[in-house]
Length: 259
Image (tube, rainbow, N blue to C red; front, side, top):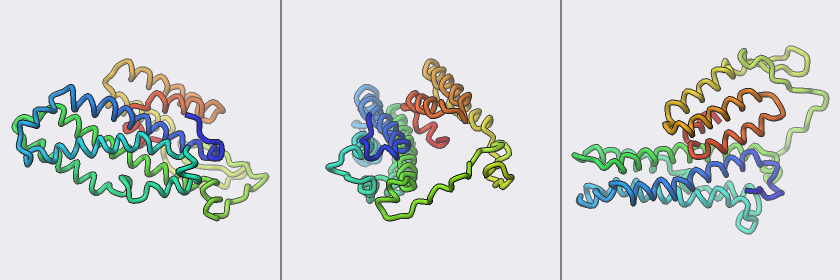
């Protein structure tokens, strides 16, 4: 999807929203539909309304979120609806992103009701898992919108001063494993963290192996992840990053904590 030209300076975060959109779209047209119509979900209709109401809320709300986000996360491209990036960000106010307490309550109630059943349909258990995956993805969307507020275009729209570039100063990442950043050639270093790039990629790899059971899909993701690791701090890193994100589009809730 091509991003409208006046927002191109914020394309990193807008592309991330597009990747999240693809996940929600697949959840809507594939996962929710399949679990509802092609598995054993219809067994809940043998129960009374009181016995199944919280389970139905999982499906109803979860599907609504998937449908809504499938269109909302690309709406920044529609200048007639959102002429500025600020108007787009503000449009999320009082929506799903402000209702995590309610959504977590729906999830917990559904789990309690499902657990109370003598024989809970398999599809219900999968819907609850899917619902929770969507909650994590919504949190990633909220974080991305917050990051959009750090972009120059947002600051310009809101009259926030943009820090002028300090010419002659080059910021170089030094020894990441030691968590230090050097300014120019002097040793004005700042301790950032103890995170090692090697361990970081190992953690992603271990998570993928633990959560993804489709062998072919897993092999593709590990291949893209390895190439991403190889090209860290090179001009091709962004290209490899986009390739990895695209390959992982259906598993964004798994990798979202690492982005």
